Amino acid sequence: MPRAMGKEGMQFLLIAYDAKDEQAQQRRLAARERHLAQGPPLVAEGKALFGTAILDDEGRMVGSMLVMDFPTRAEFDAWLETEPYVTDGVWAEIQVQPCQAGPVFLEALGRR
Image (cartoon, rainbow, N blue to C red; front, side, top):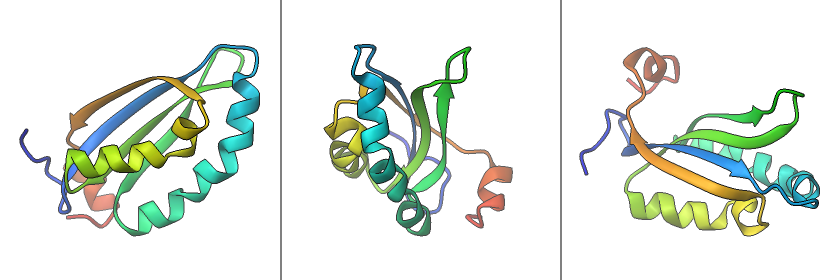
């Protein structure tokens, strides 16, 4: 797999949709603080480039989108196994694709 343009490693687009059972929203809310607490260290390490919640038409959180940068896919996968939304069963469907952040965005992040 070719390397993306980031200085550190490979970039990955993660799109994840929450489970739809009756307890799904409760699991999301219970894991949310731990999920968000990962952000600052991952940003400081250059591993998290961007993230956002995916909302439904009523504005409820129903998933997540992250752009991550890890040295290898194996290291990304190892991190993903520890992600609270994975360990707590929040995300039911996870898609991961290699991606390449545009130069203007990397520049804004001080990465070029």
